[in-house]
Amino acid sequence: MSRKQQLLKRHRRNKRIGLLAALAALLLLALFSWWWLPLLLLPLLWVAHEAWFADHLFYAPTDDYAYRFAQTDEVPGVSLAAGRLVVPGLQVQGDETLVLQVGLRCGWLGRLLDPGVRVSCAEGDDLQVFERGVRGLRYLNLSGMGPALAEGRLTLAGRYCRLVGQPRLWLFRQADPRRQRVMVIAPHADDAELAAYGLYRQADEAWIVTLTAGEIEAEHYQRMGLERAEAARLKGRLRAWDSLAVPLWAGVPQARCAQLGYFCLQLPAMRAAPDQPVGSREAELSDTRPFRQLNSLALPGDDGVPSWNNLLADLRALLLKARPEVVVMPHPALDPHPDHVCAEQAVREALQGLEWQPTLLLGYANHLHDNDRWPMGDSGAGVALPPVMDDQALGRPCCLSLDTALQYDKAMALGMMHDLQPRPPFKRRLRRLIQRCLAGRRPSPFGENEFFRKAVRRHELFWILK
Image 1 (cartoon, rainbow, N blue to C red):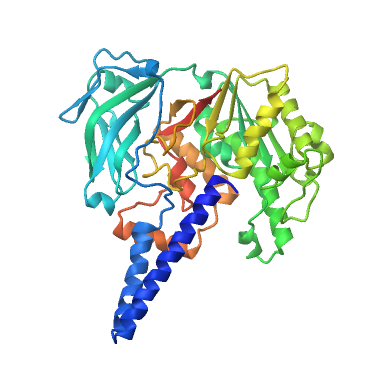
Image 2: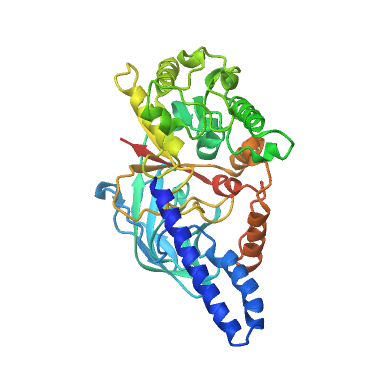
C-alpha cells in the first residue's frame, strides 16, 4: 500500500469516528426531547464540512515545511521592510529559479478563507495561496520576478495572514532546458500537458512518450450505453489519439510522439514479473496493439505483449532514436500515483548501460501524497513549493515562467484531452458551489475539471534529479 493510500485510509477512519461521535451526540439530544435540534444541526454540519473540512490535507497546517537547500544557493542580506523585499547587490538574468522562505501566521479569517501572500510589482501581481489555518514556514516562488526583486520594487502583503520573522532567499541557476532536446515521459495522456506543456512548447526539439492508454474508469462512456469492456476500449482509443494529436497544438509532430499502449494501473504488476504479460483491468484486452496502431515509429513492443521487458525495450529504442538532452518524468518522492512511480523506475532501468545518456533529468508532480489541492489558489497564479514535512532529498527546483498567452494555449491543450472533459460528479459540483459561496474559492475559467485550476499557472515547477 502506498503512503498516500495509508494516509487516505487513516483520514477516512478518523472521519468515520467523528461522524459516529456526532451521531451519538445527536441521539442524546433526541432522547432529551430535543428531537428538532438534530434536524436543524445535521444539514448545517454537512454544509460546514463541505465548506471548510472536505480538503484532503494529511498534515497539520501549523507544521513547518522542511526544505533543506544548499547554503551555496542562499542569497545573503535579505530583509523585508514595510512590505518591501530588499536584496542588496542581487544580480539576475531573468530566468533563474527564486524561492523565498517566509513565516506565516493566519488570523481567524485565515481559518475560513484561503490565506496567501500577494507579490506585487509594476509588471503585475501574483497571489500564492496556502493552507487555511497556516502557522509556519512556507516557500514562495518568485521565479520570473527577478528584475523587480533586484531593483527593490517587489512588495509582499499577507491576505488573511501576516508575515513574521526573517525571510530567506535561494537563487538556483541552471542551463535553460528549453534550448535543448527534451523528452517528456507521460504515464497517461494529459500528464505531459499538465506538467510540462510550456516546456515542450518552447523547447528547440520535443518528444512525447506516453506509456499507457489510460483506459480504465470509463463510466462516462458506459452512461452512453456501452458495456464496461467496450467503454474501456473506446476510452483507451480516444486517449491514445489524444497523446499523439494534442502535442501538434504545441508544434510537436506526430513523428516525435509515441503511445506505447500499456494498460492503466498495471505497470506495478508488470514490473513485479518483467517477462509476464499483464492485461487490462477493464478492457478485456491482453494486446497493446489496438492502442499503438497510430504510431509512426516501429518499436520492439509492437508484438503487442504487455510486459515490463517490452516497455524497457520500447524506452531504450526511443531514447536512442531521440537522444534527448533533457528527460522529464514523474518525481519519485513527490508523486505517489503507482503508474507515475513505475514510469520513473522504467526510465532509470532503461538508461542503465545505454550508450546515450541525457545531461539533465527533471521530475514533476501531478499528484501529491499530502495535499490534493496543491498547487493551491486560482488559475493563473504562481506555484508555491509543495508541502514537504520530512527531510528528504528532492533535488534543486527548476521553474519556468509562462506568460498569459502560453497559459491560454496550455488551457486549450488540456481542453482537448477527453479525460478532462466530462462534468464532475454532482456531489463534487455541489461542494464547489458551497465553497465558492462560503469559503471564497473561485472556479477556473477554463474548465470544471480540477486540473484546469491546478495546472494552468504562471509557473511550471520541476526538480533536478540526480
